[in-house]
Length: 102
Image 1 (cartoon, rainbow, N blue to C red):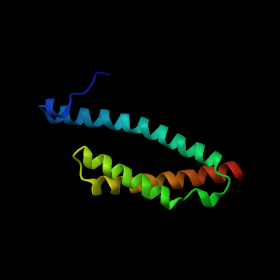
Image 2 (tube, one colour; image 1 turned 135 degrees about the horizontal axis):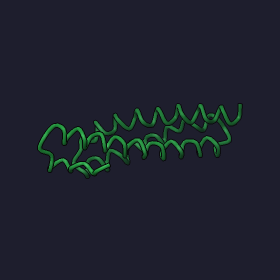
Image 3 (cartoon, rainbow, N blue to C red; image 1 turned 120 degrees about the vertical axis):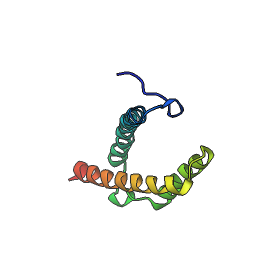
Image 4 (cartoon, rainbow, N blue to C red; image 1 turned 135 degrees about the vertical axis):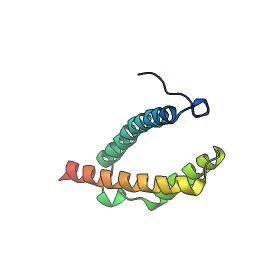
């Protein structure tokens, strides 16, 4: 697999699509790692009610909004994306928690 061009080097839509596809593969690999942390949390948390932690969720969303803004992205748009990611992470962790403790 060859490395895709950087966005400012793209000259065709094929270049753009190759870059997007490469980023998507990298994002999936990162999501596998992130969801692995959810598996660890499910193993560590003693109470099912601890899976949903609204204070931690707010902290994660604030952190990512700050990172997005400092990188020149719309923090509200990124916050919306991360809200869905966090909700899916919580859902995953609940399934894992239930699976561990039956």
